[in-house]
Image 1 (cartoon, rainbow, N blue to C red):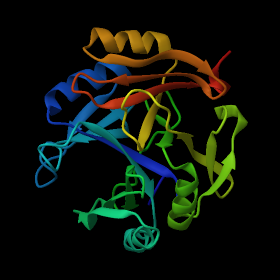
Image 2: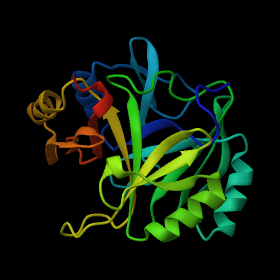
Image 3: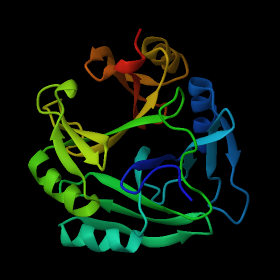
Length: 255
């Protein structure tokens, strides 16, 4: 079972050393409720819900030295086949395929430029039960110093077809999977030492400015202030532990 087609971002979760803080910050920011996975599930793993539907997760990092990070998961019908494609296309297997109990099968990879992403092969747990709605994941965006290399890699791995997207601005690429544009890509800009390649997770909100301001009162920081783009009004934030994420009010939702 799944809620989105293979090749489409289907889930996101946060790896953080302070789960208690995450369980306070994000429900206050997005109106989420949290349910801790009972044993023998991953220790302390929390599924966040919006209006009773799963939208994201949070758990402890696999490596104690890992920086807090939101991860993008792409749906697949065959995690092991994707692993073979990643290796053939020059990427790295960071975590080999494994079963998450009876919930699904996953693996973690890095593309040739170092951007980390995961795949999810659903079993009992299909992924997000709510997408593209306030308080839910609505977009995923790769920032890469090697856009041309990324175009080759992700087409080989997921069958994505890169297309220029004028709505995203100069140099913006949309990843087409079947009939839909499922994600985007921006070239890395010189912004004073940011990560050279990474996937960013966007959450939809009704009011970007108010949500960004609310995040600061909860201990978060604004990395990129709210601004209008052809994709919609957006802002980039860090939570109190430093995990990077973005807000978006899609242009189609703007009065």
